[in-house]
Every structure is written in structure tokens, then in C-alpha cells.
Length: 94
Image (cartoon, rainbow, N blue to C red; front, side, top):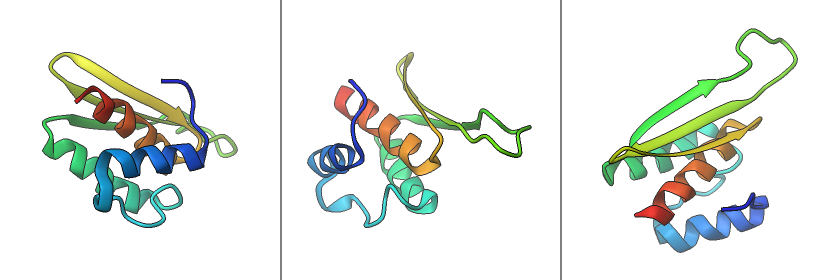
């Protein structure tokens, strides 16, 4: 999957999850974690890592969903976008 704009990512989430997509999903990591919960109910494991944990200025998040030996990951400076991007990759595989 190529990188999606925020609008494309929200549209893809709507296509994959329908009414289960909460509002403000790309703006609030706590809301995006609700999407991670949905993906986990489909048998995926979830891992989120701060790639710049020692930096006061930089921010980069990596999210990985795993299932049956396959990993679906995304990196983004915005935690919510990283969660949603990885979720879309995983759900497209389902």
C-alpha cells in the first residue's frame, strides 16, 4: 500500500470498518487506540514503539499489527496516524 493522505486514510478506514470508526480518529491517539482494539479482536497482536524516545525535539512512532507470522507496520510522527495506517494494512490483509 502506498502512503495515503489523511483524507484517503479516513476513507479507507470507513470502507473497512464502517460505523465502527470513531470521530477524530487521526487527531487523537486515544481514539485511534479504539481502532487498534477492533483490529485485535480480529486476532492481531498490537505493538507501538516511540522511535525517538530520547529526543526532546523529534517524534516518530512505529505501530505493528501481527497475525499468523505476518507483520503490518507503519511509521509516522503522529501516533494516531501510525496506528490507523498500520490498521488499514492489517485489515486489507484480512
